[in-house]
Length: 347
Ligand SMILES: NC(=O)c1ccc[n+]([C@@H]2O[C@H](COP(=O)([O-])OP(=O)(O)OC[C@H]3O[C@@H](n4cnc5c(N)ncnc54)[C@H](OP(=O)(O)O)[C@@H]3O)[C@@H](O)[C@H]2O)c1
Image 1: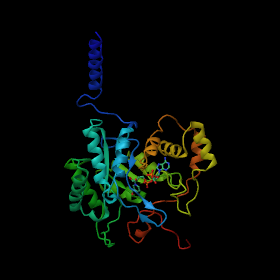
Image 2: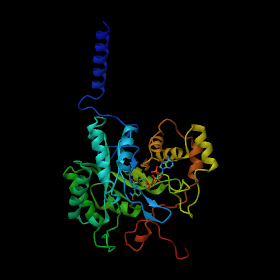
Image 3: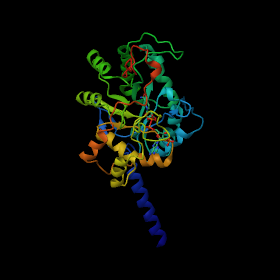
Image 4: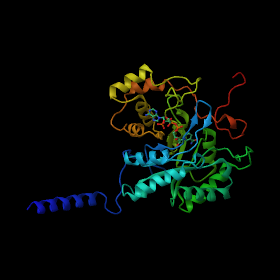
């Protein structure tokens, strides 16, 4: 009798698990999806995988272990379905390994995931876009990207020489790879308002997304309004800006994580200031892609779908907008395509 009951329970469990992950079904993530102007969907929250800059000496942090692979695996376990990488980050191999591991575990299928990568500045000629994307796909071990972005509107070889490549031609190369099915959606990153307007005026294919820096100090109201008006999804990078003492440059304006006004809001919702900052960005209509290689933070960062800020709280946070950029790419200020504000003569 006991054996019969055990068998019955096992059969029921198998049926249930089988029903939950039947062939062709998808495994939804934590973040709701947003429909883009080309009909594809983008998860409204993602994981960044750039290791960033070491603030003690200003150099790029090198990839030396498998921490990005582990971070992506932890993130997928935690319900992330959107991963952001780029050829220049040197993390595509690790992102791909993590994704293929999670698919092999049957936790997700490829269609459940949204993978973004970016075309670097040295591959802006139209004919260079396809081989660049093929290299990216080989590194990732994937057949297609969900989103491929022009990383910066600046054409420069890795030896520092600028070269002639109008971003409108690069954009044609992006359309070529989309036409081949190698990228489901295409977009741009770090384009300013003038550059966006030119792209929209001169091309019949709109970018599906614009990726720009968005955080409390850099709230980008004009670009966001323009993208909303033109149905272009906005992905926000460096969402924490200068919140963390150990990451902020000395000249960076407040707030940090000891800001009393933010602590009061965070306490009210039993959240951290980091979570409140992410929520604010989402309420601006932006898809944040915070990076972390720390399990607790990866899990904490996406745990922001169970509260909403009040208008009064949003007003408090709006006041930190002062145009301060973390990613100002000063070394490209002499490029005619430099997208950000240039300092005035007195500065
Ligand atoms: N398109 C572009 O030009 C561009 C430029 C920059 C970035 N991005 C993309 O955007 C992603 C995010 O931007 P980002 O990496 O510059 O900055 P970020 O996500 O704002 O900050 C990352 C830093 O914050 C720390 N952190 C994360 N969550 C935390 C938490 N809950 N509490 C305390 N510290 C926390 C991380 O530390 P640990 O990792 O040690 O936990 C890391 O040092 C990048 O990884 C990249 O994918 C794109």
